[in-house]
Image (cartoon, rainbow, N blue to C red; front, side, top):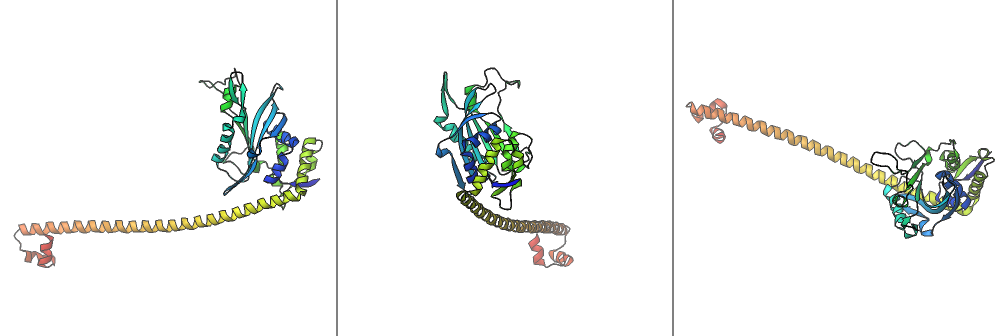
Length: 325
């Protein structure tokens, strides 16, 4: 049966979703491909909605305890950033810099003070260049001079302090395909399922039958769709983007007009340049003709002809002949 749930691409809905500890574990476990046994949203100054002139970006930080391959728990930081619009890489890097500079992200080891391992997750409402995969994992490894992976002594707290892994999700490329656990979890973000009202997504609950976790996620999104306060916040986001789109359209129109003016000015400059070149060529030609005539007159004078005779022969006045020589 098709049901309608709130669109989690909206900041207000996504925040409502991720504030639920069980759902945070479900989504982060699927993304990390590891079991998250405990997760906490970090201090409020690191969990916020950012509104800038050209971007809407939601950022929330987690401290998570995950099980590694040996089922041993370890702590990691997860910085999750979600954005509707194409975003400046520098903005992402600035947020990462906050984490690297935060003393609270350091831990005391036997032989030093090291950073807690961190993973950056980017949920993008747009595509990244020509990358065709909906989810891209960017993991760091250590290699020796000959390109062989260094495994002895790894992972090392010093190395982990200076590097981080990343997970990039291109939401427009989800396209309704479900081939693994992560794609199943992310299917509730699939914008191809948006209803006439883009604040709502159509979900076939049959695909989640028997999956308690996903049924719980869907119920949470249904609750969000029915929440008047969340609907108000989603409407506010729509208004923000409508104003943003109007502003961008106006800027594009002004840029187009400026480009047309620049093109017309360039064409005038080029035409003037061509006229200048043509005038220069005519001046050169006239100079050459004058020099040839002067040489001819001097030759005639050497042969004994008078200026009067030369003037009559060339059809000019004596004054004109005198000026040439």
